[in-house]
Picture (cartoon, rainbow, N blue to C red):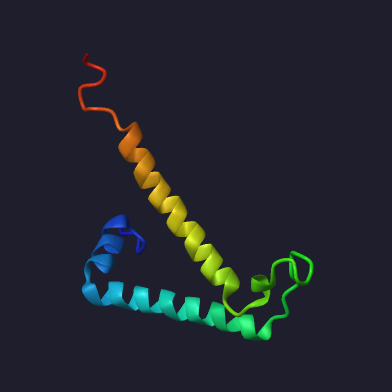
Length: 92
């Protein structure tokens, strides 16, 4: 019995360069749509008016989230380099 959602079939799907390009294009379009909703959706500012005026700017939350993502990834890379043990750590 061959299940249509088998892991091998998914691996074959992602092995095709065209499929990966479509996925990346889909993510880019999705992100663009989310940023464009910033023009339509009314935001309730977290801070009082004038306290953090940049919060009301277009795309603030998208940029803020992307910078937070970068800091987490770069921080994890730095931590990995500092905390990484040698391969024979337990053999010593």
